[in-house]
Length: 477
Image (cartoon, rainbow, N blue to C red):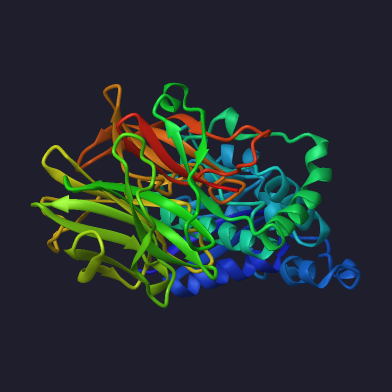
């Protein structure tokens, strides 16, 4: 049976990008999309289009929706997605599957109105989308990365989230979005508007002229008491352009630090031996894995007294496990678990007799690699019995979806480090307490966040590894 959904809009003139998203979704999923417009008269923005920049015309040119239904013709059994100022109409509907995408009228609008609303509200302020159901009193926030990407990429994130909302309405798929909170809205002062172009320019200078890159930093475990970064000591680079993604492995015979080493802009995996007491390097680093694609996040684990590694190799569209033939320097491919998707920063954790595997999945090229966290579980991580968690994605929030290191216990709490990529990749590191981890449910809450003070030369925070009284992380210097 062909699925149906109705989109309720203020006007039958919408932005080109919006119409194309719905057209592509309908064809790809064999969904019949109908439109109900509260106002079908008036004109589009064609008069203004010849005066607008080409990039604005490309996305926000007017497109007229034909054969629109009147509100009285709606099928009350079909799911409805209403945009913006349609609350009064939705309040009178007896359909329980009516969702309102707030600020949606401006998002769908064409011309300068649609462009300015997106640029101001989402690209500058970083406000989330909010979609709600007045019947069930549910309200969710949708975040996507904003100021670190160009306008066209941000529209890709928006497209991906609109498709997720439709999947939820039509097929009742889990979405993982956080419950809306007043704290989700951040009003930046006017100086942010003035400062931002200069900040972008300085970042380019920093990368090209000053050769800024990721570097490892050592801190005290006391930093976790208030989740603030204190007593930072940079670990000097022995080779490469930058180091990131630290992971510590204790073999008994030595303590080793695995990390991503950036060479000519591409990541490869390297290892250092550390002093057990001070965690200072004992000799030079050595490359342990290099491929044509970018490698990072070398998660090392010990299973039955044998060492394995799950590196990130999302450019190859697979998730693979490697086995140590001569730890820690020689590794061979053991097995490919998934192929055909981009899996990012896979983080396994053994808990209550099972392996729990967290990994961010980038489903579409225009989607985000920071948004959707998937969870799997199994009895034996080395076999092909990884079970898909029924709540996937368990987290859909760029503020704390992507993994930032191994899970650990702190003062009786199970903590999952996660990257905060809302306005900048690796802008901060949030610590999430896992409240429930079972085969049926997953729940977590944010306890705090690592950020460097403005008077420090470091910026961003990405990954942490704990050992004894020390923490090794990475930052942008």
